[in-house]
Length: 72
Picture (cartoon, rainbow, N blue to C red):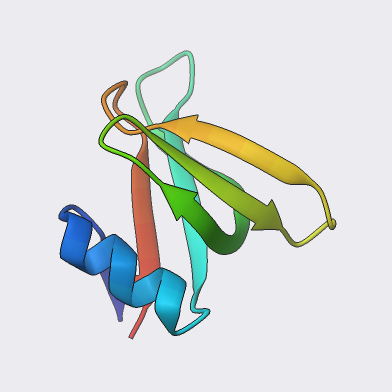
């Protein structure tokens, strides 16, 4: 089951437990698709920094419709 991470508490728990988080964004048709997956390293009120599965660092904004989900 996938849990949507919406609050700072959800993000903190996922970061602390090193849970793999998937990143979902809308495509040109408005359909949500998974665009990335990784571990949360740092987050603020506006952005999230992740270490992705391809060993890269990625930044995502929290207020642009991006959805973060973790498996529970």
